[in-house]
Image 1 (cartoon, rainbow, N blue to C red):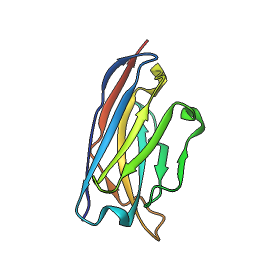
Image 2 (cartoon, rainbow, N blue to C red):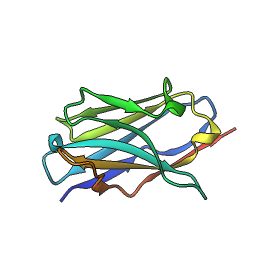
Image 3 (cartoon, rainbow, N blue to C red):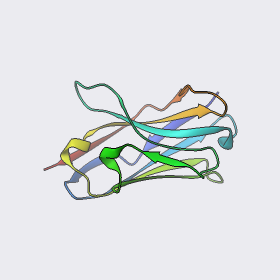
Image 4 (cartoon, rainbow, N blue to C red):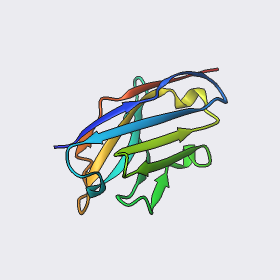
Length: 119
């Protein structure tokens, strides 16, 4: 079983930056893709970005394109979400998720880390 633990959230002023980390344990890190999702109060959870098991392919949602970058370090069992030019609408709980290779389901989830962007 895979365990995912996020960190790096906090309070930041609009225009600022944060880097979220997701440390994984359990199954070999390179056996699954990693993604970041977020959920704001009163809203549905939404997809933010994902990265393939080998880090070759990345995708981000249009609303954060050019501002957020996803990466992973397989040697460190860690995924990152670098968030720049933060906006108040980025305020949410951010979750790391894992999707086993060859499947379409995000099967593993972390507990989330809160990001608050003040205007």
